[in-house]
Amino acid sequence: MMMAEVPGSGIADLTVLPELTEKQEAVLVYVKDFYLDHRHFPTLREMAGNFEVSPNAIAQQIHALDRKGYVKRIPGGKRNLRLTQLGIEKLSMIGQTVGAQMSLLDGLGE
Image 1 (cartoon, rainbow, N blue to C red):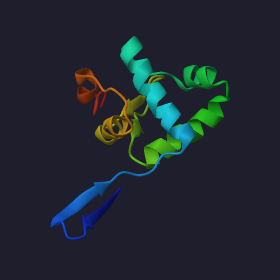
Image 2: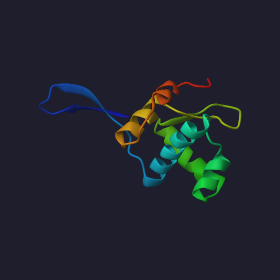
Image 3: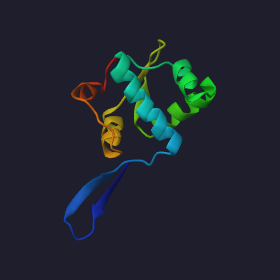
Image 4: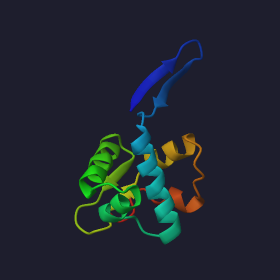
């Protein structure tokens, strides 16, 4: 995440969120939608089945999302993926409807 100043605006510390690839955006949206539908997060296998790719391919996308701060993985357990507040903000920025229950997710399961 970068901080920048908008020239001539007097606004400092503007947060610029890391860019997502098309695949990363699709995975992030899928994680959100899956949670809203099932009230728990998907496993790698469930995500791989949805996108018709290997679990390793999904793991690479999740790793990239984790590195960018949009998701985090909680050690142990099958459903150890969580959206972060940054991930929820990014979803809102890309036009995804984020319900009130999503704002309570950051830190869930720690």
